[in-house]
Amino acid sequence: MELNLQNKNALVCGSTQGIGKATARGLALEGANVTLIARNEEKLKLVLSDLPNNNQGHSYIVADFQNPTELKSKLDAYLTDNDGFHILINNTGGPAGGPIYGAKIDEFEKAFTQHLKCNHILVQALVPEMKLFKYGRIINVISTSVKQPLDGLGVSNTIRGAVGNWSKTLANELGQFNITVNNVLPGATSTERLSEIIKNKANKSGKSIEEVSDTMKNGVPMKRFAAPGEVANAIVFLSSEAASYINGINVPVDGGRTKSL
Image (cartoon, rainbow, N blue to C red):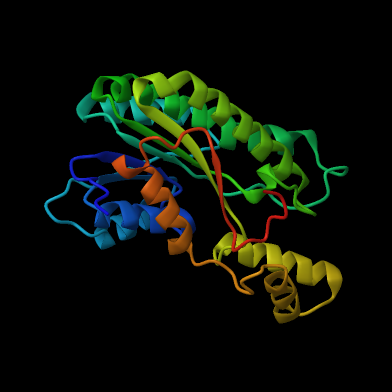
Protein backbone atom coordinates (compact mmCIF):
# COMPACT_ATOMS: atom_id res chain seq x y z
CA MET A 1 0.00 0.00 0.00
CA GLU A 2 1.32 3.41 -0.98
CA LEU A 3 0.80 5.99 1.76
CA ASN A 4 1.85 8.89 -0.51
CA LEU A 5 3.28 11.25 2.09
CA GLN A 6 5.89 12.76 -0.20
CA ASN A 7 5.59 16.56 -0.30
CA LYS A 8 3.32 16.49 2.76
CA ASN A 9 4.30 18.68 5.72
CA ALA A 10 3.71 17.22 9.17
CA LEU A 11 3.84 18.89 12.58
CA VAL A 12 4.45 16.38 15.38
CA CYS A 13 3.98 17.48 18.98
CA GLY A 14 5.82 15.91 21.90
CA SER A 15 8.27 14.46 19.42
CA THR A 16 11.44 14.09 21.52
CA GLN A 17 10.49 10.75 23.06
CA GLY A 18 8.04 7.85 23.10
CA ILE A 19 5.11 7.78 20.70
CA GLY A 20 5.77 11.28 19.35
CA LYS A 21 9.36 10.44 18.43
CA ALA A 22 8.33 7.14 16.81
CA THR A 23 5.61 8.95 14.84
CA ALA A 24 8.03 11.58 13.56
CA ARG A 25 10.33 8.82 12.37
CA GLY A 26 7.46 6.88 10.76
CA LEU A 27 6.21 9.93 8.86
CA ALA A 28 9.74 10.74 7.68
CA LEU A 29 10.22 7.17 6.45
CA GLU A 30 7.09 7.60 4.31
CA GLY A 31 8.47 10.77 2.73
CA ALA A 32 6.86 13.56 4.77
CA ASN A 33 8.66 16.76 5.71
CA VAL A 34 8.55 16.62 9.50
CA THR A 35 8.58 19.55 11.92
CA LEU A 36 9.16 18.54 15.52
CA ILE A 37 7.77 20.56 18.40
CA ALA A 38 8.67 20.25 22.09
CA ARG A 39 10.18 22.33 24.88
CA ASN A 40 13.71 20.86 25.08
CA GLU A 41 15.86 22.16 22.23
CA GLU A 42 18.78 19.80 22.83
CA LYS A 43 16.50 16.77 22.58
CA LEU A 44 14.85 18.24 19.48
CA LYS A 45 18.24 18.58 17.81
CA LEU A 46 19.09 14.95 18.59
CA VAL A 47 15.82 13.63 17.16
CA LEU A 48 16.10 15.89 14.11
CA SER A 49 19.60 14.58 13.33
CA ASP A 50 18.31 11.01 13.47
CA LEU A 51 15.28 11.41 11.19
CA PRO A 52 15.37 9.57 7.84
CA ASN A 53 16.07 12.19 5.22
CA ASN A 54 15.83 11.72 1.47
CA ASN A 55 16.12 15.35 0.40
CA GLN A 56 13.31 16.23 2.82
CA GLY A 57 12.93 19.47 4.76
CA HIS A 58 12.84 18.56 8.44
CA SER A 59 12.88 21.24 11.15
CA TYR A 60 11.81 21.95 14.72
CA ILE A 61 10.03 24.50 16.92
CA VAL A 62 10.84 25.04 20.59
CA ALA A 63 7.64 25.65 22.57
CA ASP A 64 6.20 24.77 25.97
CA PHE A 65 2.61 23.51 26.05
CA GLN A 66 2.24 24.90 29.57
CA ASN A 67 2.40 28.35 27.97
CA PRO A 68 -0.23 28.62 25.21
CA THR A 69 0.61 32.27 24.50
CA GLU A 70 4.22 31.32 23.77
CA LEU A 71 3.09 28.38 21.65
CA LYS A 72 0.91 30.61 19.48
CA SER A 73 3.68 33.17 19.10
CA LYS A 74 6.29 30.58 18.12
CA LEU A 75 3.92 28.90 15.67
CA ASP A 76 2.85 32.18 14.06
CA ALA A 77 6.50 33.15 13.61
CA TYR A 78 7.27 29.79 11.98
CA LEU A 79 4.31 29.99 9.61
CA THR A 80 5.34 33.49 8.51
CA ASP A 81 8.52 32.08 6.98
CA ASN A 82 7.43 28.55 6.04
CA ASP A 83 4.65 26.69 4.25
CA GLY A 84 1.71 25.39 6.23
CA PHE A 85 1.04 21.81 7.30
CA HIS A 86 -1.02 19.01 5.80
CA ILE A 87 -0.73 16.85 8.92
CA LEU A 88 -1.01 17.70 12.63
CA ILE A 89 -0.20 15.18 15.35
CA ASN A 90 -1.45 16.44 18.73
CA ASN A 91 0.52 14.58 21.38
CA THR A 92 1.34 15.73 24.91
CA GLY A 93 2.54 13.91 28.04
CA GLY A 94 -0.26 12.89 30.40
CA PRO A 95 -1.15 14.50 33.74
CA ALA A 96 0.16 13.09 37.01
CA GLY A 97 -1.71 10.07 38.34
CA GLY A 98 -3.88 9.90 41.44
CA PRO A 99 -7.53 9.53 42.47
CA ILE A 100 -9.87 12.23 41.23
CA TYR A 101 -11.36 13.09 44.63
CA GLY A 102 -8.06 14.42 45.94
CA ALA A 103 -7.07 16.27 42.79
CA LYS A 104 -6.38 20.00 43.10
CA ILE A 105 -8.20 22.49 40.88
CA ASP A 106 -4.96 23.68 39.31
CA GLU A 107 -4.21 20.12 38.17
CA PHE A 108 -7.34 20.21 36.02
CA GLU A 109 -6.50 23.69 34.76
CA LYS A 110 -2.94 22.72 33.83
CA ALA A 111 -4.08 19.56 32.03
CA PHE A 112 -6.87 21.42 30.20
CA THR A 113 -4.33 23.98 28.99
CA GLN A 114 -1.83 21.40 27.77
CA HIS A 115 -4.25 19.00 26.17
CA LEU A 116 -7.17 21.06 24.90
CA LYS A 117 -6.24 24.73 24.73
CA CYS A 118 -2.96 24.03 22.95
CA ASN A 119 -4.58 21.52 20.59
CA HIS A 120 -7.12 24.20 19.69
CA ILE A 121 -4.43 26.84 19.12
CA LEU A 122 -2.65 24.50 16.73
CA VAL A 123 -5.82 23.62 14.84
CA GLN A 124 -6.85 27.25 14.41
CA ALA A 125 -3.39 28.11 13.08
CA LEU A 126 -3.12 25.19 10.66
CA VAL A 127 -6.62 24.58 9.30
CA PRO A 128 -6.78 27.65 6.98
CA GLU A 129 -3.92 26.30 4.87
CA MET A 130 -5.24 22.73 5.09
CA LYS A 131 -8.36 24.09 3.42
CA LEU A 132 -6.24 25.65 0.67
CA PHE A 133 -4.34 22.39 0.23
CA LYS A 134 -7.69 20.52 0.14
CA TYR A 135 -5.97 18.00 2.38
CA GLY A 136 -5.78 17.80 6.14
CA ARG A 137 -5.13 15.10 8.71
CA ILE A 138 -5.48 15.88 12.41
CA ILE A 139 -4.64 12.98 14.70
CA ASN A 140 -4.93 13.35 18.44
CA VAL A 141 -2.97 10.90 20.58
CA ILE A 142 -5.18 10.52 23.65
CA SER A 143 -5.75 7.39 25.76
CA THR A 144 -8.03 4.38 26.01
CA SER A 145 -9.57 6.20 28.98
CA VAL A 146 -11.75 7.96 26.38
CA LYS A 147 -13.62 4.63 26.16
CA GLN A 148 -12.98 3.22 29.63
CA PRO A 149 -11.70 5.36 32.57
CA LEU A 150 -8.50 4.00 34.10
CA ASP A 151 -8.11 3.56 37.85
CA GLY A 152 -5.78 6.05 39.50
CA LEU A 153 -5.75 8.52 36.60
CA GLY A 154 -8.59 10.84 37.63
CA VAL A 155 -7.44 14.10 36.05
CA SER A 156 -6.27 12.35 32.90
CA ASN A 157 -9.60 10.52 32.49
CA THR A 158 -11.48 13.81 32.76
CA ILE A 159 -9.40 15.84 30.35
CA ARG A 160 -8.92 13.04 27.82
CA GLY A 161 -12.69 12.72 27.59
CA ALA A 162 -12.99 16.43 26.87
CA VAL A 163 -10.41 16.18 24.10
CA GLY A 164 -12.28 13.23 22.59
CA ASN A 165 -15.52 15.20 22.38
CA TRP A 166 -13.72 18.28 21.03
CA SER A 167 -12.18 16.09 18.34
CA LYS A 168 -15.47 14.49 17.28
CA THR A 169 -17.11 17.90 16.99
CA LEU A 170 -14.19 19.15 14.91
CA ALA A 171 -14.42 16.11 12.60
CA ASN A 172 -18.06 16.93 11.88
CA GLU A 173 -17.19 20.52 11.00
CA LEU A 174 -14.06 19.98 8.91
CA GLY A 175 -14.89 16.85 6.93
CA GLN A 176 -16.40 18.89 4.09
CA PHE A 177 -12.93 20.36 3.42
CA ASN A 178 -11.23 16.96 3.06
CA ILE A 179 -9.79 17.42 6.55
CA THR A 180 -10.18 14.36 8.75
CA VAL A 181 -9.91 14.34 12.54
CA ASN A 182 -9.28 11.08 14.36
CA ASN A 183 -8.03 9.90 17.74
CA VAL A 184 -5.48 7.19 18.43
CA LEU A 185 -5.91 5.71 21.89
CA PRO A 186 -2.72 4.01 23.11
CA GLY A 187 -2.93 1.38 25.81
CA ALA A 188 0.05 0.48 27.97
CA THR A 189 3.04 1.46 25.83
CA SER A 190 6.72 1.15 26.71
CA THR A 191 7.47 4.83 27.31
CA GLU A 192 8.85 6.96 30.13
CA ARG A 193 5.26 7.77 31.09
CA LEU A 194 4.45 4.09 31.62
CA SER A 195 7.63 3.60 33.66
CA GLU A 196 6.53 6.44 35.96
CA ILE A 197 3.06 4.91 36.38
CA ILE A 198 4.53 1.49 37.22
CA LYS A 199 6.99 3.01 39.68
CA ASN A 200 4.23 4.95 41.46
CA LYS A 201 2.02 1.85 41.69
CA ALA A 202 4.93 -0.15 43.10
CA ASN A 203 5.67 2.50 45.73
CA LYS A 204 2.04 2.69 46.85
CA SER A 205 1.41 -1.08 46.88
CA GLY A 206 4.72 -2.23 48.31
CA LYS A 207 5.15 -4.57 45.35
CA SER A 208 8.20 -4.73 43.12
CA ILE A 209 8.30 -2.97 39.77
CA GLU A 210 8.44 -6.40 38.11
CA GLU A 211 5.32 -7.58 39.94
CA VAL A 212 3.35 -4.47 38.99
CA SER A 213 4.55 -4.71 35.39
CA ASP A 214 3.58 -8.38 35.13
CA THR A 215 0.12 -7.67 36.58
CA MET A 216 -0.45 -4.95 33.98
CA LYS A 217 0.72 -7.18 31.15
CA ASN A 218 -1.63 -9.94 32.29
CA GLY A 219 -4.52 -7.48 31.85
CA VAL A 220 -3.72 -7.29 28.13
CA PRO A 221 -4.88 -10.19 25.92
CA MET A 222 -1.53 -10.08 24.11
CA LYS A 223 0.33 -10.25 27.46
CA ARG A 224 2.78 -7.50 26.64
CA PHE A 225 3.13 -3.74 26.34
CA ALA A 226 3.12 -1.99 22.97
CA ALA A 227 6.28 -0.62 21.43
CA PRO A 228 5.97 3.11 20.57
CA GLY A 229 6.41 2.24 16.90
CA GLU A 230 3.31 0.04 16.95
CA VAL A 231 1.19 3.02 17.99
CA ALA A 232 3.01 5.24 15.49
CA ASN A 233 2.07 2.86 12.65
CA ALA A 234 -1.63 3.59 13.23
CA ILE A 235 -0.97 7.34 13.36
CA VAL A 236 1.03 7.30 10.12
CA PHE A 237 -1.71 5.35 8.33
CA LEU A 238 -4.39 7.82 9.47
CA SER A 239 -2.15 10.64 8.17
CA SER A 240 -2.14 9.20 4.68
CA GLU A 241 -4.28 9.34 1.56
CA ALA A 242 -5.13 5.68 2.17
CA ALA A 243 -7.22 6.78 5.18
CA SER A 244 -9.16 9.38 3.19
CA TYR A 245 -12.64 8.24 4.31
CA ILE A 246 -11.86 7.53 7.97
CA ASN A 247 -13.10 10.45 10.03
CA GLY A 248 -14.25 11.13 13.58
CA ILE A 249 -13.26 7.82 15.14
CA ASN A 250 -11.31 6.52 18.14
CA VAL A 251 -8.73 3.85 17.34
CA PRO A 252 -7.54 1.92 20.41
CA VAL A 253 -4.01 0.53 19.99
CA ASP A 254 -3.99 -1.46 23.19
CA GLY A 255 -3.58 -5.14 22.39
CA GLY A 256 -7.28 -5.67 23.15
CA ARG A 257 -7.18 -4.42 26.75
CA THR A 258 -10.20 -2.10 26.51
CA LYS A 259 -13.35 -4.02 27.38
CA SER A 260 -15.79 -1.98 25.30
CA LEU A 261 -16.29 -2.24 21.55
